[in-house]
Length: 336
Image (cartoon, rainbow, N blue to C red; front, side):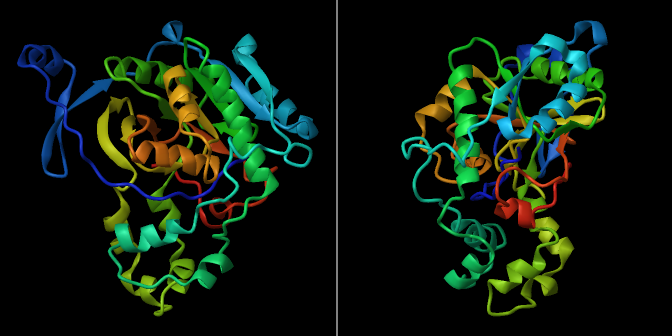
């Protein structure tokens, strides 16, 4: 069950690590200072945990009753994790009306392209309503989108009452590594996050750069100059957007990075803490596709989100159970 959509954007790096000097010498034994946009930052470096020390979270797999075939596939993929895995019955948009106090009656997505063109790319261009709507940027929800958001909300309601974080997977989630290696990276990430107060850790995500790359045609359709984006070029786009999804490079874990997020989307796989679930529930209703909602909450400082890069979980390329969203139409899944 894939739930995805675009979302309003973020800013770039803003947070520096500089703690009391009494901690510095000890940190230097295992850490390395690296430059980030010309600023020195203390960046931790760890190795993945050995297998005997692995932490295994409780795992909820969101799955529609009508798609037992997907659950059977996920059972096979997750078999080695045993009792840690539970099927979570998804809300079915065909049979269940989602209350407006959980998911707002109007879907707010039209500002996505405007924000991308004007804020991130610095282009002073008009964005016609008809162009937005022709590309799927409409105010009306599909039943599948509302139900998908409600499924995640129901998971958050459970997690909010618990004492430990939970891994949430959609039923097309596919690990990019063997589970022992994935859990090793996850365990090391948890260690690196000690002293911080994370709310969400993305294992699957897309970035604003991934949204824009390869979309020069659709972007150009929204301006008077149909060739504008092509004239600018892919490198220009990368230079503008390469850091748009990130606030801070927290540290390295072997060949992977732990990053503090600013703007991300996709909800194929993420770890959520009880405190994070409580914050999200306090800020309902969801006003855009659920991954967009998570990204907005991160960007505006309501939750603290992190991500492991490259991503540890991908999603199957099969047809989603929900109607295609903007992300499904225009976004290529990307790992950094």
